[in-house]
Length: 207
Image (spheres, rainbow, N blue to C red):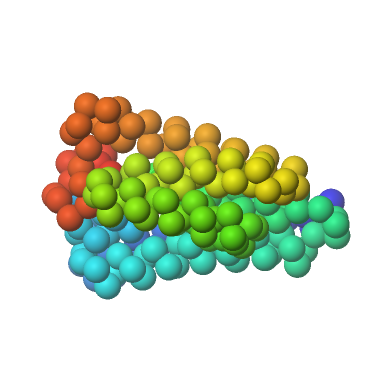
């Protein structure tokens, strides 16, 4: 039990490493949260720093999710997926509200991708296809992100996945909707920022 709790705490601390903030600071000496849309994520990194840094941030943020789930697998003595799944949630919470950076983080989608791809690869891939199509067709990253987190639990339920994975996928959906609530409002109004366009403060973000 103690080891499992420790794994969840470490996962939160891992998730709190904001690579967008660190890379922007290292490259330009800036706080990326004061530029572009103000989010510490891959999309804002793309707008502020360019493609290379953005891809790096996306991959590193996703790896936080992968690492957190595997940490839960390695340190858990339980035969169920509860500890790995909770470690994944902790990493996402860390990304969204990082203790190292005054609790101002991103929106958690890249880390979510890492978590769900590790817990349930095929359903995540299926949901990801629809998410990518939505982004290509609309150029709304936020819409694709929300489609991904919405479809994944639906597919998991349809395929009869275990309770821990389904439960965590629903929690992830709720977190994503909460973090993207302003984006949803702008989508309905037709004022959401599109990928490739200059972002206003608080605009569309992947993470």
